[in-house]
Length: 244
Image 1: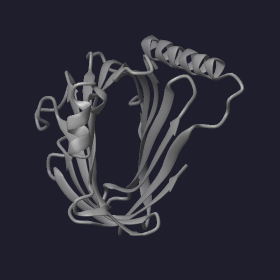
Image 2 (image 1 turned 90 degrees about the vertical axis):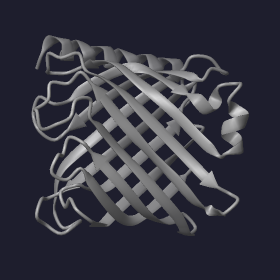
Image 3 (image 1 turned 120 degrees about the vertical axis):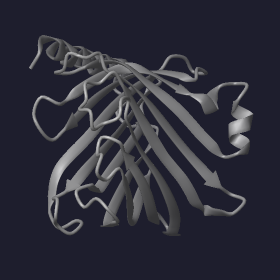
């Protein structure tokens, strides 16, 4: 593992220690959720992720935590019958002031395989919290943010960086049971094979309908431009949310 990656891990450790110190004796978050997603059906790519766990928590002193963990299916096997891979993003964010729409961010990005883990540093811009735009976003029931992962520390020579777009929308004029949410990860300056487009994107759009209490039926359209033979995939499943 390269020295720059070790230095990055050291910096991340210091960041977490600073967070713990700033929180003092306060241990409970002021809000958050666990979000379990199961996908027993996928249309085109049987090796795609069949389970996703999202976790979020609001922490003291303007810190917040968010993570996602994807578990991938064994190629050639039925969905949820045998898993073969994982991918996780662990995010710690700090809102720079009580009223700011900017968060400083650090992300530990880990996945199956060797010499492919990453540490990302940057900032998130919550457009729906910008003062002169807040009323517009509220009127259309949309939240939207861009996370600029400006510095990536990893085991490759290229200076890779990424823009991560995240959105969520509700439809109270149709039903309070319905939502649309998703993301687009747009990565720049990677050294890639000729079969992969430059600056590839990975994205998901999930449509959810609450069935009963915290149980949702979900369908998810996925795009992965790293996967040239099967760029698109459709997953159908169930989601269970636990909020506090």
